[in-house]
Image (cartoon, rainbow, N blue to C red; front, side, top):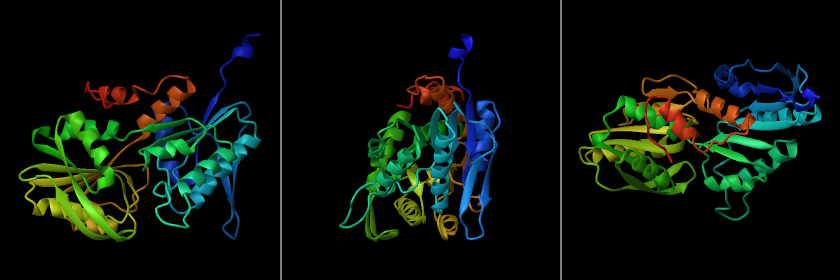
Length: 328
């Protein structure tokens, strides 16, 4: 009779693209990654396979969905395989949720790709999502399943407190869309914030940019969720320094860093770019500082598995580093 109430086992698996991070998450969680393989066909097609019994298990699949689209497809196939193998619960842990910038129809005859991805994940059998710093908060509403939206501020703010004098600090948003994020950082640390207003001629190409606010003799931290080509970030950093700032750094959650983005950053007025490991960095640079997300994802997985609240997760993540401040 006791076996009837026995807790179902938890198994963590990784897609190929995020294996580097999944190993650290599993280590913080306290167990090894599950055994899975991917068979690669000669034409590029592939087939994931679980090499252990997962019947009745809670399966956590860790995979960011950055380019190429094979990473998303592999996550979907892993979820489908778990569903067909009679997993009890399938949770997709997606440190970087790709296609999130396509969250609305901003012109005629275009898809809302992030809604499509939400539908695909649910159709594949995913019953819960754990992710970090979505490009747009409303993406959570695209799902009919629970979404645990973690914040990179629980990593960045302790780093700032430990490494920088905040008395002369101002936060900045490189565009209007990131104003809310910059204001939240400023409110948490009791500082002010400024913003840059940009006009694009087309995607990934900036027309003009203006600075709103006074940065003279201040140390500026640019904050955003994604750095792609680096054009906006570098132009904002250069503009801020030209406006009299003492220094400018950036803290960006997801380092897409397409094309020559790293070269642009190295040649910009920015002294440091602090990022997370939600996406693997293509090459090293003296200006890049990578912070791990493994501990916060491991804690989120533990709480989901034990049906505990995540409401104070950010406060706990900070307190562990000796800082008793609430982040939201």
